[in-house]
Image (cartoon, rainbow, N blue to C red; front, side, top):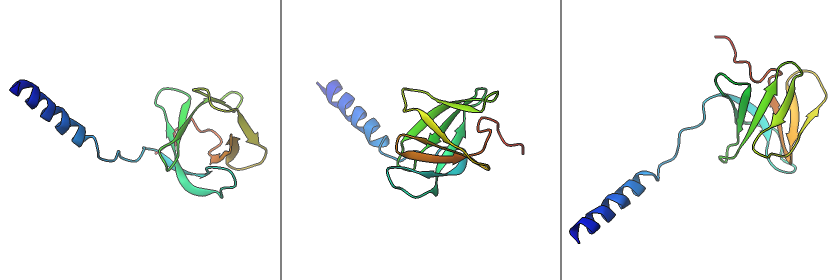
Length: 115
């Protein structure tokens, strides 16, 4: 019986250690407008996935979008069953929408900046 009690206490101790907050994602800050009618703000993070053409756009609330970038065409494709990517025409940063969320990212998002 004491083994069951001590096992339960160890389990509770492990769960208590999981209550901390996770560190912010690594990457560059980008402008985004999350939700219908939201204004653009420098609140999202662009994470480049090493050795791939994938990027992850992290929202300030913990949500994210995972995308694949095709450098030949400049197209972005949603991964994980996301809504389609609607690219807005224009110069400068690449501006696009996925559902009600809008983003502004570098034109070649999967290419890491040189130091």
